[in-house]
Length: 133
Image 1: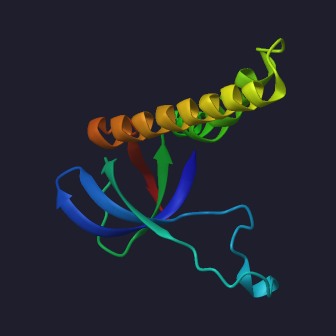
Image 2: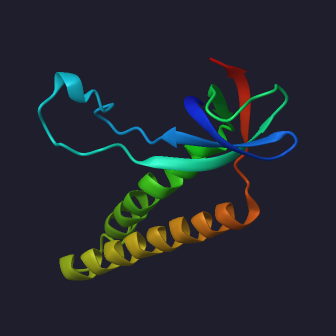
């Protein structure tokens, strides 16, 4: 997955701190829409680079494919566990099935939170500057 970023700092040789605009479903094409009025959030990440960059450069940043796996876990995990908790115990009364579904949803949220902690601690998602723009 590639994104366009701006170099904001050079903390050491071979690394750069870059700011990436977080994209949403609408793509933040605000000039053609009078809709929500929200502003895009900025995310600061540390990326490795083999090419010389300077503060203020616009660059293309590649992130490992693990980002999509983590996103699937965070968004689909709780929903899938809710459905499993609701559909599997078909012999139980309706209220108990909802409770099992709710428990599955909470387990999915706990799994997503644990994954988030692991990613933050271990920096398991890597970013690489591929080229200057």
